Length: 355
Image (cartoon, rainbow, N blue to C red; front, top):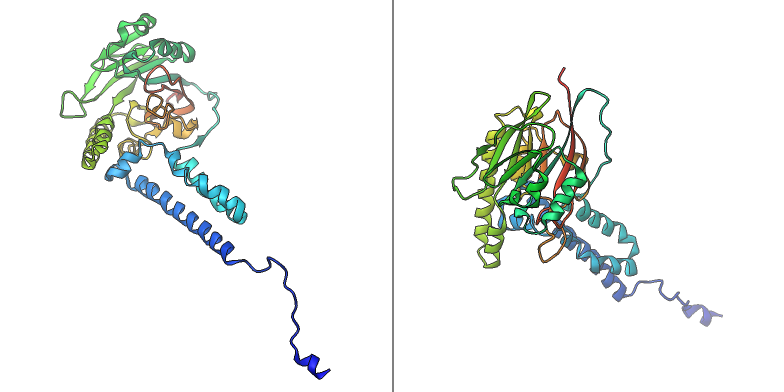
């Protein structure tokens, strides 16, 4: 008996009760991948917050498909589901980070027309690129949405074709690259507002829309294209991207100077800003008290550009309808993506009558 007591008993352990070194390594790898993805997402987020135009990478990132920041999830999410499903919540949070703030997702339901006296206005902004893509599609969207006012940029003689024929009974004014057409309301002659020292650069025009005898000031805007800076990056000239972004920002500052001398509460500024919602060029106008229509009433992503790039799909929202705080934005839609390099933006607006 004494001998048996001195011999230690050996009890079998359950297989798999202790994690193997290999499984621990895989779990650490999954955690490290999540941390790496988190750091990657912090980069564009911080650059957007401080102003993407401040660095060449931030300026370039504005024009890249933001869903690209979700690509690490293609590896991380299946691996996490297989080896560490408890971390799938972290994966989902990072994925939503990309899908909502970085990609600019909005979700608003259309609002009814307020039951008070006022002005209802449907406005369409459209960089038509001269109608060289598909002029019939441009006419089709005008006929489909029936806007009260159309503001075109980069018109390049578009009135000489079927677009001009369709608008023959409208009030139409054109100047330089801009066309303004009103179906119901008279419009004043366009007034050119120079936003760049170069006469060949883009600018903006302003006019008055006469609604029930009351003038509403509207600006048709086209800021500098980013293609010059993006082409420079392709040739290794990253400084050119910063210079290009700063030049567009200078145009935005001049535009801000014009707008702040208007009656901002009822002002409308719309067009091709070549700037996303994070851009300082757009935030300059919002700082005046204007609001972006899609941000307050849009649904989805509202992308307007990218369909004629190698990606063959819209990937950014650079066309905007900005309105003063007295305007109620009822609904915002994006039109077809085949009529031009840009899709049109259609905003339903309501201005309550003054007391």
